[in-house]
Every structure is written in structure tokens, then in C-alpha cells.
Image (tube, rainbow, N blue to C red; front, side, top):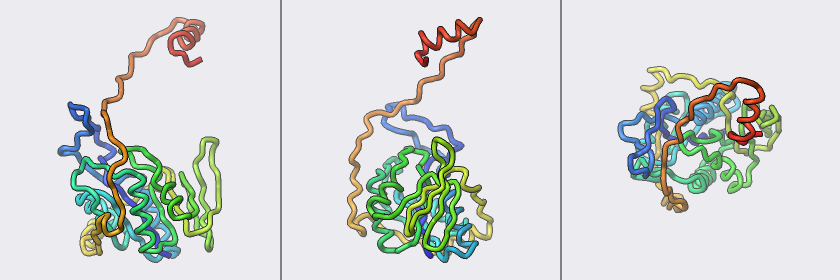
Length: 253
């Protein structure tokens, strides 16, 4: 079975995000970029399935700027077999919207014919949590989101999902789309020999035009601003005063 794993280049999760002075967006100048953490977990899960003998080939795909090659090379160093870069933007500040990404991924899926697509549940830059679901709708495939455990049983995928009430285990027919949550696994570090080997693994470059997909934005970002600073706490003298403040000032009860 072949597995397709979409990965995205985002600001490293350790970096404090800065907003441009004019509020036009996030400042990306001299900012460390890395693979979206949820996508890293998806790559790791695909590799583990391959190590179990369930998967024969892992294809990683990224949609965005040319610099996303670095992200794909990281996935190849972890253990993916080959990569596809859909060069869909020239400006690093351009974020391809989830619907356009899903349409492009649907075309890649039609071309590659994987038995399973494993993706991160969301990207940490826009927190959309929409691409996997949209891809499922476009392909007409089964979907299992927020996966914290994945097992392949014949033609089915058994997925344990993290839901508000706890855990839910479902069985879906493959081919399927699985989006992964944080507790699924701990991604491995790429070793130096594997990093060197990754440079020789195939990385194919495409454009949206090759797939006949329009990636023109449908949304316009009007303004970007920092979140409001957290107000200082207040000491109260009694339970009655606490209840009064929660009721009359905070309005939470």
C-alpha cells in the first residue's frame, strides 16, 4: 500500500510570532521555519506503518513556496521515499487557502493512487482544521479525524479519535483520509546519514497549472493584530466577594 502525507512549512513552534507594524500580516523576516508539528506526527505514523510491513511506499507532498523543499527534505530524512512540491506561491507571506490545497491534493491523489492519506489535523499558523475534511469530500473517501491511534486491519483502518467526551474508536473503509492529533506518537529525529541520503531521494516539482487548479485567494486579510495583554489578577477577601465579581464583573456565572 502507498501512503500520501501532506506537509506544510510554518513558523517554528518555538518562535514568538511578531505582527508587522502596519498590521498587514505576520513578520517572517529572519524567522526560523520548520515542518508543521501535526504533519511531522503524520510522517512518523506513515513510517511506523511501513516498518510494520503494512505500507510499501511513503510519498510526501507540500504546497506553497519553493523553500518548502527544505520541509520535504526533512520528511525524506525521517524515512519518506519520495516527495512532490507544488510550487503555488512566490511570496512567503502568501498562504494557500485550505480549499485550494484540498483541490490540489485531490489531483495528486488521483495521480498517485494511494490507499491512505495521513495528514496533520491542522496547521499551527492558521489553525483552519479544514483541509483533511475538504479532501475527503472532494474524493468521496472515508475520513477519520483527530486520530490518537491508528491500526490497519485488512481493507479497514481502525482509528481511535480524541473527542470532547473522551475517546471514540471507529472503523473506516480504505481508501481513507486520516488526520492526526498530538498524542498519536513522538516523531523521530533524522540522523545525519539519513539527512545525507535524503538529498539523493527524488523530489518532483509541479505547479497548480499542471493540475488545472486555480489557487487565487477567496479571502482577504483585513488586519492582523497581537492578542490583548492579560489583565492582572485581583485578590478577593471571601467566597462571597469572588462569586459577586464572577457574576457582576466577569459575567461568567
